[in-house]
Image 1 (cartoon, rainbow, N blue to C red):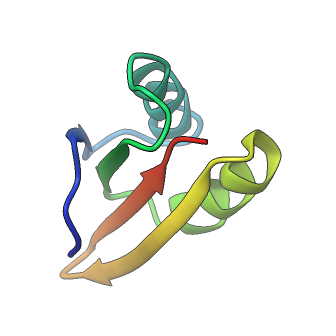
Image 2 (spheres, rainbow, N blue to C red):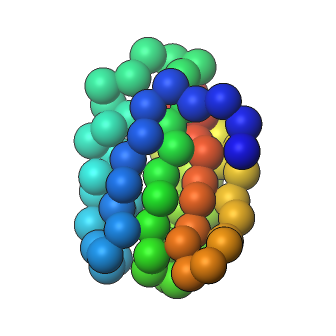
Length: 76
């Protein structure tokens, strides 16, 4: 996992809560900063891909390990 500036643990939350929490967390970050999100909802993979495209933020990394999904999003 690359470096990140802030972490959001959305474990146990289902759609759309991980996206909503990520949107709120990104709102507090400066442009260019990276947010790491941890989620357990399998649907979050497609959700974060779509979220990045719609918001213009960059999805740097997306991976799954042991039922946990990790995402790195760079704020535009």
